[in-house]
Amino acid sequence: MGVSLSFNSSKNQTVISIRGSFTHALRTEFFHAITAVPDSVIELVIDLSETEELDASALGMLILLRDKHPGSETVIVLAPHSPIEHVFRTANFHQLFAFETAV
Image (tube, rainbow, N blue to C red):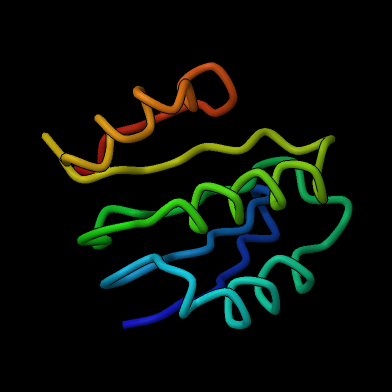
């Protein structure tokens, strides 16, 4: 469980993966991850394919991430048929982020 960060310099891509619950309890780990993302990153991937639940504070953290890296394309990766996608659509996050389905 938790937050992990990986870089792919050839694609100028950073991936932040969240496993388990994406809740207020991860705020410090998530903040450390987003501050480690280079300002020059072109694509920022938030991998939620192994995220089981999220709360309202997680939505706020994603907005914070978007505000901190406005020049990056942010893509959220979800598991197929994830109930989390319903939460994002209800909160109109599909208008703020691009979504992909994990393979």
